[in-house]
Image (cartoon, rainbow, N blue to C red; front, side, top):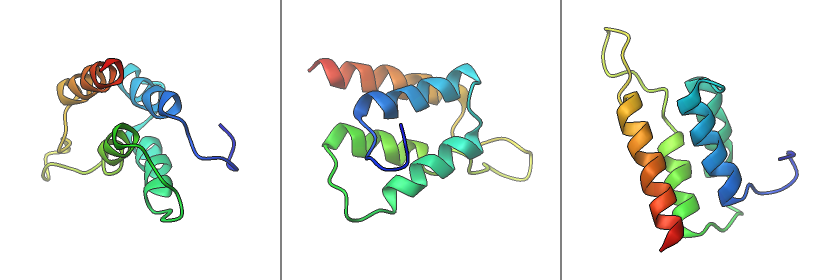
Length: 88
């Protein structure tokens, strides 16, 4: 995806999968998603908007322990839910 076009649902799903697989950091995923969420000139379908908002803030800490608000299990569940919603 280049900087000039709105990402497709496939691209959003790929970012979530890349994060889970360790090919993308939480910070990278958050910065990418935040950029799109903040652009109020774009129109999104419900599934894409839901998934983008999951990625936006994925790097939020849970507390001072160094853990994250959303763990790897939650992210895997989100990916499964995204794929399920795409088939409905």
